[in-house]
Length: 176
Image (cartoon, rainbow, N blue to C red):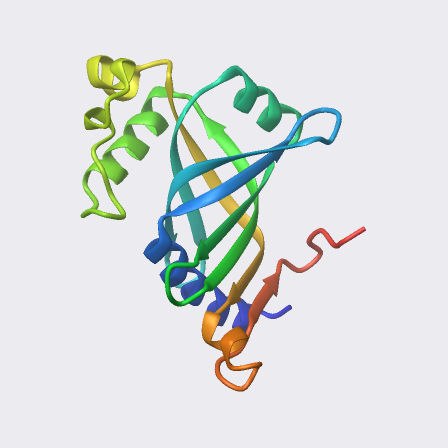
């Protein structure tokens, strides 16, 4: 798929995902079994590059999953009124070095709510006491290889209003 498609899909995805904020992120273990959890994400579209960020509790399970298979699926759904959905299939990199952890912490802390938040104020004692230096805090950087944007208006109108947008990285993974 072309760069032009990416330049159309990526900003539409960014707007929708950043409006919804929370997604279900799935990882898989070494045996290929899925595990999902809710995460607070932030996406940045720079005109040619799309990067997602998650400030996260670093658990042994999440660390093991990403070490053995560094891919995640992030599924967003706004079922309250509009029924918009979007998906990002991504390479995920768990960043645990001090500079990356601080950068991610500050990125969320310095972004206006509701997209941003102060990680030190959400009640996790290790984060409150140690800030981004906490071993319990980590940054996950997401680089998508597949995006899908499905406006609720498309489904509600029987395909008469709006359109589904999708993009796949050239040479990217395909369904098996």
